[in-house]
Image (tube, rainbow, N blue to C red; front, side, top):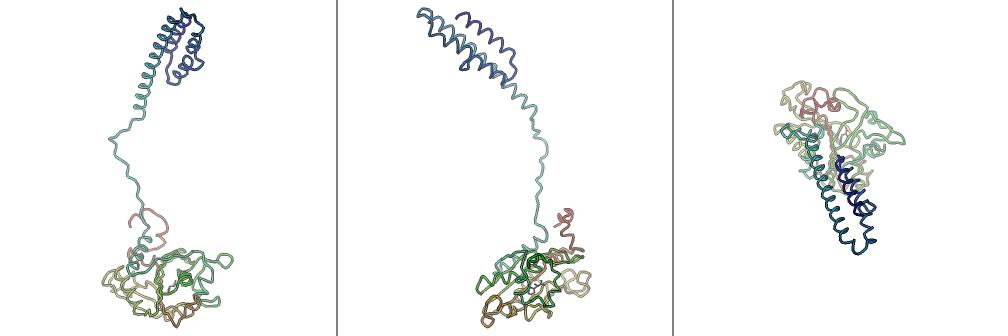
Length: 338
Ligand code: PHE
């Protein structure tokens, strides 16, 4: 047994000299110290020794064990520090390099304008409501007093889908959806996307509108005028003038188109306003009794006012962009200017 222990010691110390990695060291450790390791095996034989032999062998085996344990520990430490140094070399971070700036995005100019419109009407007590882009003919036309044989349908170059569905041509269907689900008073604005078959410097097939609807026992045209004037002055400046021109919409009676004095030339006349000094910004009017009937409101009990504005048009008045299609070309050099 003594010889065996000595042999194990020399052999193990020799083997340690060849070890270069922590993994190899671990498997060598198992070869000697593991449950079926060489040293463990010899120790198990201890029980078979005579009483006289046992103390000396016990002492020797403890010595061998201690020597080897220390040798293993030394090597572990050495290999670990080697590994650390290597890591420091290969994974070095140069803390003197300038940092990289994160690329911040920001809201699209049309969204920025839409948020401002929402904020202005929000202060005047209007609640923001939305509706679906894919609509039925009923909500987009019929309920808005525009039956299928109505000439006004031709004015909307509608994208038709299947099964009587279409892409809404305006945000007005949300008037109907809201009144169907809510009793007066109503005071809402509806920001959202609209679609028409249209493509030129001032039209894109997808565009945005903000609809407004106000229904109450005694809503008056002057109230509408006050609200819209306040909106226009907050949006375009205190000097802004406003005029209502008679117009026609199937779902309002009377109806008006609303112009503001051109913000670019202060009403003197320039290219932006076609030398008229005025630019149209929205359509408006008193809710037609036929619309109230469609949603089971009693036209003798309530009156209402509605308006709808094109957001790209308003954005364009703020930013003077020659071709509004550039809003949707996603050229970052254009979008970063806002
Ligand atoms: N929906 C109309 C349009 O798209 C605008 C409008 C809304 C007019 C509400 C009157 C009242 O042209």
